[in-house]
Length: 135
Image 1 (cartoon, rainbow, N blue to C red):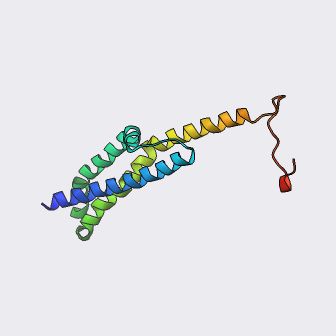
Image 2 (cartoon, rainbow, N blue to C red):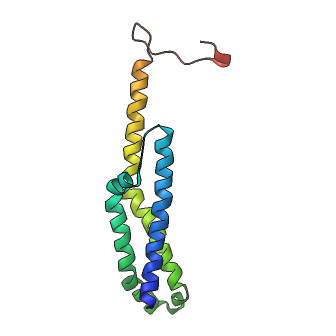
Image 3 (tube, helix red, strand yellow):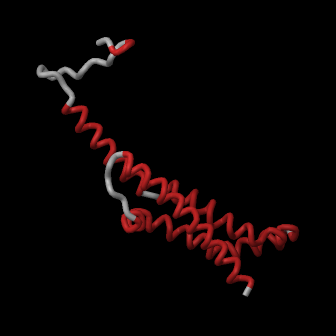
């Protein structure tokens, strides 16, 4: 039963990070006026989320080896599962997550489109404004 509690804590850590990450991505998408749903998040980051879950499933074996060498770690076993779930998810999604890069690509595309629209008739870009709104 204890192993189920530990795994559940690990999965809660993964879920907590995924919810925080989705909220952050949704705010980024809202800033550039695009819709971003939980479905799109799961589709774009499924691989990193899967690896996060796998990390939680592997942790019992690694933690057992660590406690064999350092028995005092046994006192933080539940916290370690929560940490592996949340921090492991953070690290894995930082490297493998695609949601943020997809949103940034759309933002860059929109910025480039606006840059191409905002030009003088002869093709020169509008010069930056000087102090107090002077050109």
